[in-house]
Image (cartoon, rainbow, N blue to C red; front, side, top):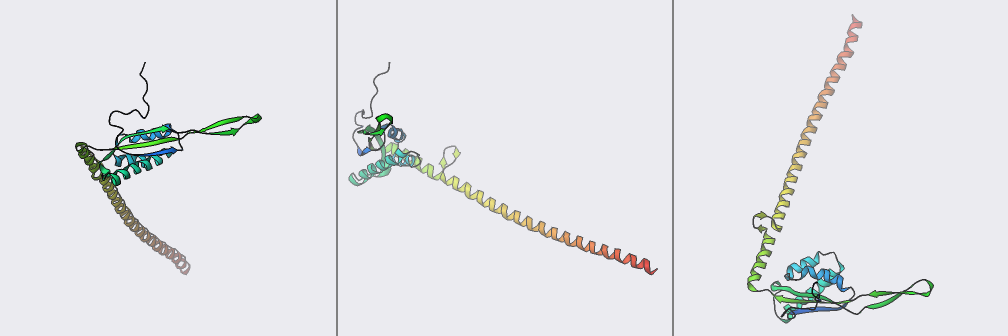
Length: 213
């Protein structure tokens, strides 16, 4: 048998301290918020914001606002840089449940439970050694200098530009070939029309000569 499960507020020593921001009474269930919080736990602030930006969940929009509030608290109150922060802890506790009722048949009623939750995000400062690694990863992602392979934003832009130039050059060549072919076709049509006219004249002149004889 496994031991008792720890809830979201069970922290290791020192995890409760840090710059934090919380949202109380959010109109969503704690289980839905925890799915999104699991995506950013332990990430640096920049990558966590990118993950939340492209997560197709309503909870991601709310969590992103809480993350931005926590970063603002760190920058304005503690004079820290946003690039040196990471998500130290994030959790969602259940809030009060709003009970509503829906009328049913024969005078009965069914209860509707509208869940709420309290979302909290705690930020910490990245250690200098790890900060250097994180910054190196960001630079590689921007410049495209990956170990052993080509990739990154810069390389993708270069490939797209090269492909567009090749497509434009190919389009110009095809246009020139089309113009040449059309010119040749026009010349062939003119030659054929001249030959047909000459043949008609010869055919018309032959009966006249026979009648004269």
